[in-house]
Amino acid sequence: MTQATAAKFDQYSQLNDDDCDERIYAAKQALKGRAIILGHHYQRADVYKHADLTGDSFKLSKLAGQADARYIVFCGVHFMAEVADILSQPEQVAILPDMAAGCSMADMANLAKVERAWSELSQVLDPDQHVTPVTYVNSAADLKAFCGEHGGIVCTSSNANKILDWSFAQRSKVLFFPDQHLGRWSGHSMGIAPDEMQVWDPDEWLGGLTPEQIDAARILLWKGHCSVHQMFQPQHVLKFRNQHPEGLVISHPECRFEVCKLSDHVGSTEYIIETIREAPPNTRWLVGTELNLVNRIAEELRPQGKIVQFMSPLICMCSTMNRIDPQHLAWCLENLVEDNVVNAIQVPDRDKQLARQALQRMLDVS
Ligand code: 13P
Ligand code: SF4
Image (cartoon, rainbow, N blue to C red; front, side):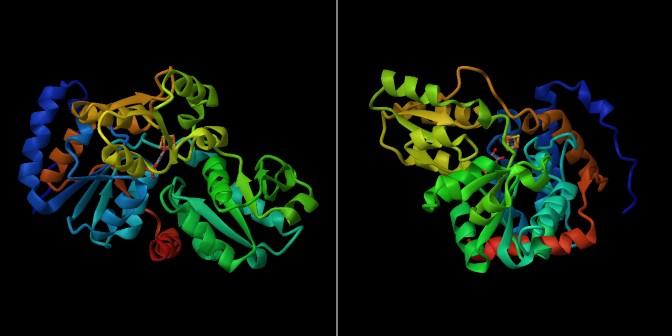
């Protein structure tokens, strides 16, 4: 097949959403089984509705590995499309409709800093003997490769406890990056005491810890966080409890510890949706996660008399997830109709192999 020259995004940026909608539907028809669209639960409504399959990061990782379409169009953020590239077959292509859709938490750790932490740790103990590196899936592929190389593993918000169990069966300590909150909450749920979890500040020598603190720690928590989930505060939960004593609170484990502690349920985006869906009619919920998800579930469940409220009085959306808009999706799909690939995500081969090991360990353990 001869390839037409790829259409430039400029031609799409001025399209209105209705025109994009029509063009997306038509492109999907034309592509038939050649492309699959995966959509994370945080995607905006006008993109989410075009997804063939939706899920949390874990479910989407598995779906990407099982997909048989040539093109995997990932409506999510960069690390998710990287995972799709790592777990898919060599002839498949993972595509991120807007390359600016990153994750600010993932950017809080990088290979240079993690390698430095590893080498600083070796001043106190042999990390390859005593420390399992665990990276949250919200991280760049080279960090997953680091974990693959050093006997470590990847986790998501839906399997962190199982992954920590596995990690402690390998070595006595865990270096958990980049989200301190998921690490702390998971450690707490497994019964690990607060003083056995120390925050590792990558900008300080030895993470800002003493050798004694490192020795006593079971989990070293990388000093990273999600700026969206950081917005939810204990006082939001307390106010809700006061106004609606019968109400239920559900949070994502990226929320700070105090918020998780005050919640009735804590879990991944898929878990949050399923828990509220399965709840009895006429229940009221306060939800600590991204606004697109909360709005969607509130609308879906209103007919059952369920009231679903967003936890923060401020509007806080994941601005990078929101980068994927109908214009970018229409642009990618129409190019694919002509077999022009735009915005392919290609993890370098060495990283891919090692990162796949760490991801495969996760899939096996889960
Ligand atoms: P989930 O794995 O729960 O979908 O979360 C991904 C994420 O980025 C939450 O901020
Ligand atoms: Fe990253 Fe937070 Fe956005 Fe999730 S909500 S993708 S952790 S910035």
